[in-house]
Length: 151
Image (cartoon, rainbow, N blue to C red; front, side):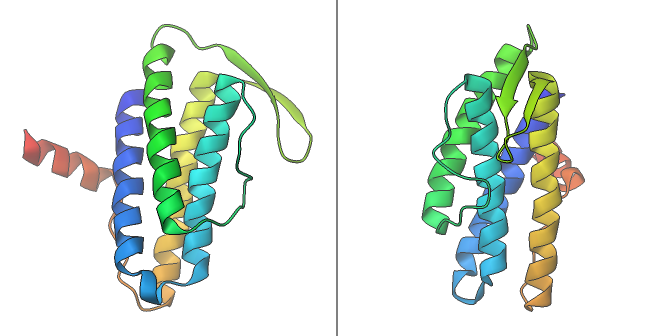
């Protein structure tokens, strides 16, 4: 199931990024900020799992090209993590941006990462509608339908 959610998340983020790039001339900064946040959070969680210090902050704004590069890198690393997760789910010890300390299993972190992206993609869709732009359908069922058409 984690691998399916990873594939869905990668598909939805990539599809949304393509839509943001296509509409970049009329896109409100709020959409770019929210997408940057999705990418930053995914990157930060990968770094926490790997035990390294992230080079991005939670609400750091990026241009869409940097978002694309960060998204590709973190998606590749998430793939490796998901496959290693199949055999074990270690508990990760980490500190969040507020300084609070936590311990969470990799399994729960991965579920959070995939759910977090869904939440903010919906916010971006709403922002796009408010600015008279057509949002892209990143619903999970759309992903499943497209997958079944390919087989």
